[in-house]
Length: 335
Image (cartoon, rainbow, N blue to C red; front, side, top):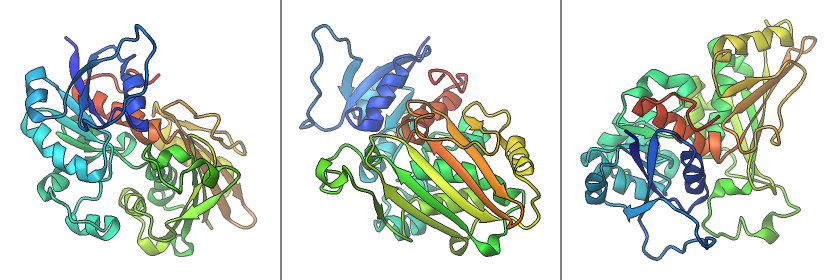
């Protein structure tokens, strides 16, 4: 019998990707959950079939027998709805930053807001399957990772855990994202005339995704420099990560370290040095691609990693988490 899943925020970019991915999932029946009565719908061709629509309420979820709800909503909305759906018996995968940082102190420091659900914040499991697969399977609430931290964490974690990186020299992450990462809500910053033929950095030294990387890798804030930049494309993230490794001998040794961590991961692809990934190679997929370069004479290393911010950085990873929570094959609907 198919599992019933609901999507709140299905009109946004990540929500639309959820609808598209789940339409080809063999084990679920999708419900679109209306949260905003004033939200405009995109026009559809005559005869187009869409999933069943219900209200985004605990009562509607309980009546429909919803097994899992995706919240593709702002953090304040997710805090409001997550507790209601969990109380109604549904599991929740939240795509906002509402439940990622573990404590109310961390949330207030990085998001500049008070957290209204401290108990759920403490309970939530951070849903990066490559790092916390066992915890995800039994969770009621998954905090889906941010798009930037997914790339950065997967790229940096092996450097730190293997002990190969000189942390006293710091690790620098230069990250570039397409405009869809800012969401569908209009703003001057993402208007066409502001973005086209432009390239800009933002949230220097205090980007709210930084603590996720620190949490996942074990780095201290003074050991990690992160700069986010907006590039004039629709989707995709590419991060270039710089480090020093005085005990490393070659790029071949470095990629072997990555192979020990990710050789059996279905959604992490490694490149043979000196090849590195690009955005075109991961667009519309749930893959995170990683390539490395190393200069033995100067002990300087570079990791290049790429993902689709709307899929592995949002909706695809959310489905990956749902698959683990509901007992499906992790790759179902994603390959």
